[in-house]
Amino acid sequence: MANAYSLVKYNVDHYDIVCNKCGIEKHEEEFYKCSATRVGRYYTCIECWSTKDKSGKNLNETEGEEKELLIDMFTAMGYDTNENIHEQFVQKIYDKYGIVIHK
Image (cartoon, rainbow, N blue to C red; front, side):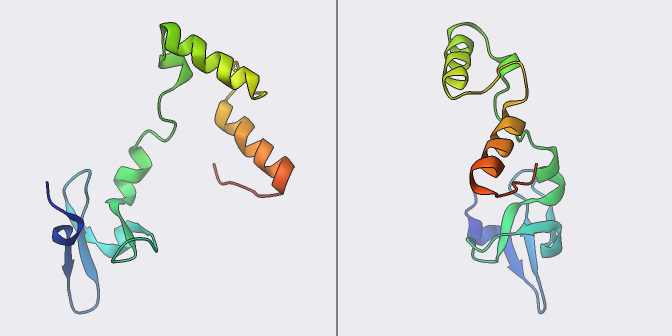
């Protein structure tokens, strides 16, 4: 597997970055900004980023004991497991801290 340094090519005025998901070399503007990386961009392009599963494992896709455990955990934290957990989380953060988290 290539490391992050081999995924970046410096040109005179910009970086070309190889997306770590699709493997296509793209202009730096096609990647979201990220101050934690060497080039100041994420290594996954915007197109791949927008198509990736943001919710992780969905409660509806989970089965058996794992699903029961998750339902118990979310219920104990005050979430309605019949509604969207993420939207409830965003609302709780806003109510408690006044911070708006983008969905």
